[in-house]
Amino acid sequence: MSSWSAQDEFNGLQSMLHFWAAVNLQHSWSQIFTGETITLRCEIQGGEGKVWKYEWTAPNTNSPPTSSEYRISRVSVSHSGDYRCRGSSDYLLTGWSDAFRLTVSSSKPRATLTAHSSIIPAGGSVTLSCSVEGSAGWKFDWFRRDSVSSKAQLMRGNEANRVSQGGLYHCRGGRGDPVYYTEDSSDVTVTETRGFNYFISAKLRDVILCSVLTISFNNYEFIKPEMRDNS
Image (tube, rainbow, N blue to C red):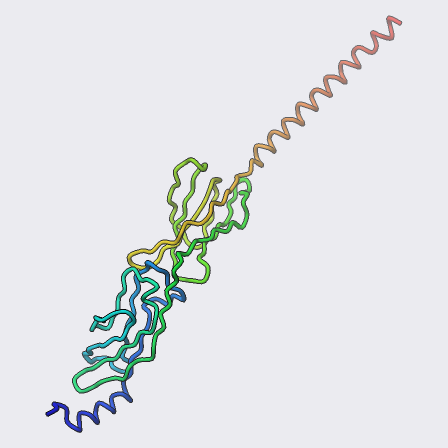
């Protein structure tokens, strides 16, 4: 004999009208990459304050979790597919959620570094921007080195970073827990101008040239009368 009465069944049908399940990705990332760690959540709408048990349907697994969170470490292309969940609490049972379609990209993303200018004006700075095309949620690490053969120094920064020192710069993106990193961007060379030194050199050149012309002119005036007396 079933432990459920007709009243329980009626209450269960009513509960489907008042409570419903939904699957959501923990982070609002538009694209997921192979190797990332992600968490799907089963949320019971209207079920606040109740203790729920959870069921999941998922691709390529025979033992889905029974908790509200479905955590996948080092996600792969084989995890792509539809995920559904439902919840039960005493005699209450929700219907299955709408399918959440998970698509995992097989390629690893590469960061892109863009320099608003590759030349730093004297006493100034330039802005460098780091981005990952088609996806969001990244924090960025910046690296600088003096030459191709020198060791890169880590610089913390945001998506946009102002620099006042010349050198070779590259960046990478990271997100999630544990952190998943993109491929490093290509190097961008930033050069400092020597405008101040050039200004001093130019002024010094003008002073020297002016002095030479003055001396030459004075010598000419001094010699000229002697030449007329001898004639």
